[in-house]
Length: 220
Image (cartoon, rainbow, N blue to C red):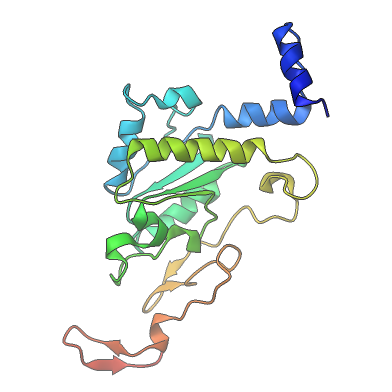
């Protein structure tokens, strides 16, 4: 490896010194194309980030793609209902590697103010791996730009070989995840163990009550 101070000094003389790894990661981090979809109010903030005031084009990420086949980044911007969760996982599986996920806003991270709702997923990271979480309700465009910078730093620090290499360079890494289905009382499975190893207590294992509060069932 070339000393960083020496690289700076050589750069002043018009000599560029780099490695294949640095060049490869530079190309990846400078052309992260997000997928063009939004779920709720956080999507408005995501759209604002691409406007002239914030200019997401500075990061090479202004090209929102209408197809998951052409996208590198999924921004989960808004509330993920249990009806929508299978579609989000399906879109993620259709994205080509390398692919990344930003969970934007409290709803995408944990359910937000709708956490106690029976129809709201308590965080998209139960089903797909999330690289950057953005708290807030909703987060401002500056927060999304900070998330892009955080993701770029993560890509820059990934070696091409050995431990810590990107998932798509690891033959044993899981790149696709099971799409949940609507069960009798909840999504099945309640989480993907590959990304969320914590066992989630099923809805059917607790007392189930109808709209009047009367107990109707205790089995799943």
